[in-house]
Length: 598
Image (cartoon, rainbow, N blue to C red; front, side):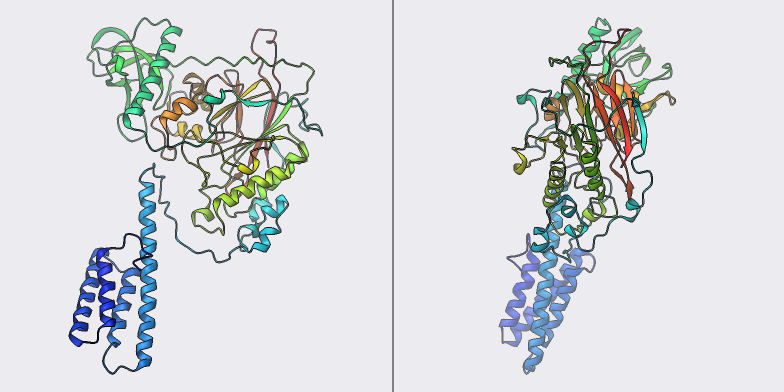
């Protein structure tokens, strides 16, 4: 017990030593003293735990088994009592081990933002361990992801297999009548896929996190505010910014960050504007009654114009929201006669919620082999931490093994197509670092495969001169839950996405939601949006859409599975344009896009 348990309480050790002395002693007075010490320690254990549990029951059984240790007791009864004593010791050992693991989990949880609801896992033992013979027989993608590969008791989802509308196009964008969604039989040798950032500025490996201080966070937020403030000042020809708490009888222009006066949801009555150190670093309430329309969220940096006669409240009359980022100008020569690239985008989870079978992923592999796209952007989660069977630990192998099998099935199943595969992690991938920005997956077996690209979250890619921004974090859902908007009839997604281009960030919300563990020093380097992308991939729990926002085609492909039923994926045709349209407007490289049911 002392060797196997971790952080064994001192009174438990006293109980064990009393038992050892009791069994090894032959004198009646010594045995009575040891048994009395055992009883006192057992009473203290019950007082310490306030209720009966597995440990107290085991100690009670140990105490009862000592009653047969008397002079003249038959040998059969002594042997039976020793068996009872040994069984109780085993139960106590298991109880202490489970308790130590729970304390270790609680210690680890204290270093991260806790998710809503209890996430404590039950410590269970798999009932059906996987045999080596069955693992060796799995060679094809369908066998690798078969139900028996995870648990013999796993069965395919009935609701998913009986879904309706397979292959139905639910959203269209652009000229879809002339679009050709079937790619060529041979892969294109001239396909160029790279990250927009320089190699030294891109997140290509894991890093140490959980070391940031409040001062570091403040410095990052201050630098962001000053940088965006200078951009707004030069764009709108503002002479200077006034302190937010300065009493003035005339209209003033102030720079600040939107925040809430409490821990609840932001509303028009709880809105505060916090200035940076250069403007006094003060907070002041804001009255929005004179504004006809606005959309504000915590962490948004903006410029306000209004009256603050007392210094205690700003009556806002005008809001300067931000300046959109310019588009990237590529040096790649455009071939006007070249066929547009076919890009497929899918976002996990890739299993239904009632079964740990990858039937939706197998159907997606069939779509890839049929349509033969040039590039496949596959976003996590691949092994979803919110899956019911994973939360209950009803799997017979490690999460890494499930993930490696999933990736191997995708790579092997699409080998005949020859398409480029881009894997982007998610905060919900249970086997990966759940920190933002999130480093790419580590797959040593595929490090030399030219078809596979491991991307971080977020990232900006360059595909044949077309910039594609990708993030698997549900920023739309997070912003929608926190922002306040005055014009309900306005396209809210477009209103929200527009700010992403203005604040130069893939995740402009501050503070982040509980599920996002932000590392602000790395976010300052790897979480920013350098340009307005031609295409922005923003998967969300919200309804799928394709929308042109300020010249950028924003796509929410939806999830490949929605609960127990099938979800959607997206496909698009992209081709860089060398000249603007006849009216001088910029032509989007995204010629057509669709959202399709799996």
